[in-house]
Structures are given as structure tokens and as C-alpha cells.
Amino acid sequence: MADLAARPRRSVLYMPGSNGRALEKAREIPADALILDLEDAVAPDAKEEARNQVCAAVKLGGYGKREIIIRVNALDTPWGLDDIKAAVAAGPDAILVPKINSAADVERAENALSDAGALGRVQLWCMIETPLAMLNIQSIAQKAREPGSRMCVWVMGTNDIAKELRAAHTPDRVPMLASLGLALLAARAYGLVILDGVYNDIKNDEGFAAICEHGRDMGFDGKTLIHPSQVGPCNTIFSPDPETVDFARKTIEAFEQPENKGKGVLKVDGKMVEILHAEIAKRTVAIADAIRELEAAS
Ligand SMILES: CC(C)(COP(=O)(O)OP(=O)(O)OC[C@H]1O[C@@H](n2cnc3c(N)ncnc32)[C@H](O)[C@@H]1OP(=O)(O)O)[C@@H](O)C(=O)NCCC(=O)NCCSC(=O)C[C@H](O)C(=O)O
Ligand SMILES: [Mg+2]
Image (cartoon, rainbow, N blue to C red):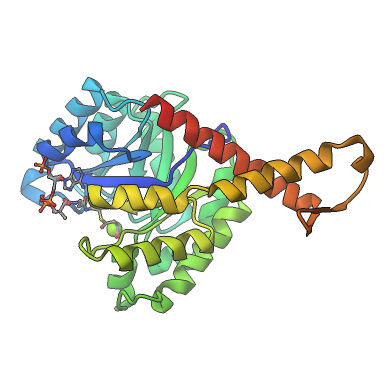
């Protein structure tokens, strides 16, 4: 799968597939990506109706440059495989499979996508949200290295992690750190994009901002969200600020100067920068440019 790492995924908004109003409204919400959910946000009796509604919305389009992801039910549920068939036929950018516990689960998901006739560009996103996934994390990540793998994004399921660990959602996220850290290490080691989990307390703006900053500082590429009011603040927090972008451009330029050719360390604005900082700088500028392009198109 092509390198999609510079694509902005600051804000990734879930909505229940059974909520027609939300599917409609999402066409105007400035989230970088939308997850149309058939899993936990949809009651068992509403599963088939939600599947039809989501697939119809994706086929109709109108979501602009937002990346469109359909979250299907887990493969061992009565709905999982039929969801994948219908979702692939609707043509989203990605299918998100929940409760991935092992490398074998990734293989089943990859095969289900192929059997459903997925074309080259359809990505596989995986929910990382169980203790078993944490114990198998490296072998799950390694599947991304196999030829033809569609797996390119992981999404942390912090509600399921808290449930399975019998842990609390605390402001400092100490009970969650082992899981978040393990998943981040594996994602980075194998070149996967990784998104932080959701924040349930919709009215708590301060708590939300603090958790976004925490996720950003840990290294997540963006955050999954549950309400439109979370999109703006999340976009701001996960965008590189102008000073950082300016310094990144200066760093790249400094290493490109003829007099600095062959040097491994320089000083920019009084700060030491090494070649590794130039690599970070290139990524910062690529993300900033991609964000500008995305926002200009909306
Ligand atoms: C949480 C909600 C049920 C709250 O809904 P509601 O009471 O309707 O909110 P508001 O009245 O404040 O809504 C204002 C308007 O915004 C629209 N709206 C609300 N939420 C969304 C949304 N997510 N996407 C798009 N539009 C949305 C409302 O329709 C109102 O519109 P208008 O009529 O014009 O005023 C609701 O926010 C909600 O359902 N959120 C998403 C829940 C969800 O998808 N959950 C599943 C993923 S979370 C998870 O578990 C991840 C993982 O698996 C894990 O384990 O952690
Ligand atoms: Mg979950």
C-alpha cells in the first residue's frame, strides 16, 4: 500500500450508521475523516437498516475530500462478513475492522476484503482494543510488511480497553498508558498510522483539550471523535503551529546550503539541529502543506 502517512488524519469522527441526520450533517463537518459505524453505536435490531443506509450514503457521496471509512461488525458476529461485502461494494476509502486480536485476525480481514472484490485502493484499518491484541501487538503489526497488505491505520479503542482492563478513564490516562504505548511502539516500528481513542465527556472542553494534547505529545497522528463540537479544537491541537513549521522550513533550508553540505550538525536560530531533525522537519512541512491543501478544498 502506498505511503499515506502525510495525509492529515487529525480529526476522525464516528457516527452511528443508524443516524441518518448525522450521516447527512457530516458532509458539512470539517473533520479530516469520517467513520460510519455499523458496530457498537448500532443496536442489534438496527444492524441491517444501518448497513443499507451507510452504503447508500457512501455511494451518494458529497463528502468532499474527507476520507470515508465504514466500521463493520467483528468478523465472528452474524453481521461481519455481510457488512464487508456491502461496504466494499459501496466504495469507501477504508474498512475498519474491530476487535483485532491476532495476526490471524488481520489475515481473515485481508481475505474477506479480497473475497468481497476490494480494488487496489481500499485500505484496511484495524481497531486495537483488547488485552489479547496488546500481547500479540508485534505479530499484528508485522502483517503490514506482507506483500499486498492493505493494513495501514490502527485505531485505539479506549472504551473497550477500559472495559476489558476494568480500568477507569482518568485525566492522566495512567491506566491506559501501557496499552497506548505498546500500540504506538509497534505502529511506528512497522510504519503504520495510529489514531488515539475517543473522549466521552462531550461537554468538558478543558478535559478534551488536555487529552488531545496528551495524545499528540505521545505521538498519535490524530484522534477519533464522537461529536461535531470536538472537531475544531482537535484540528487545531493536531496541526503543527506556524512557528514549528517556520523552524522546520529553516532547518531544511540550512541543510541544503552548499556550505553545509556533508555536515551532520548545525545551529538554526541558536538551536542545535542534526540530520534527524531535518527528517522530522520534512514530515512537519509535508503535513502542514497537506492540511493547507485539504482545507482549501473544503
Ligand atoms: C453522543 C451522541 C449520541 C449525542 O447525540 P445528540 O444528543 O444528538 O447530540 P447533539 O444534540 O449535541 O447534536 C448536535 C447536532 O450534531 C449532530 N451530531 C451529533 N453527533 C454527531 C456525530 N457523531 N456525527 C455527525 N453529526 C452528529 C446531531 O445530529 C445534531 O444535529 P442537528 O440536528 O443539525 O442539530 C452523538 O454525538 C453520537 O452518536 N456520537 C457518536 C457515537 C458513536 O459513533 N460511537 C461509536 C464509536 S465510540 C467507540 O466506542 C470507539 C471504540 O470502539 C472504543 O472501544 O473506544
Ligand atoms: Mg470498541
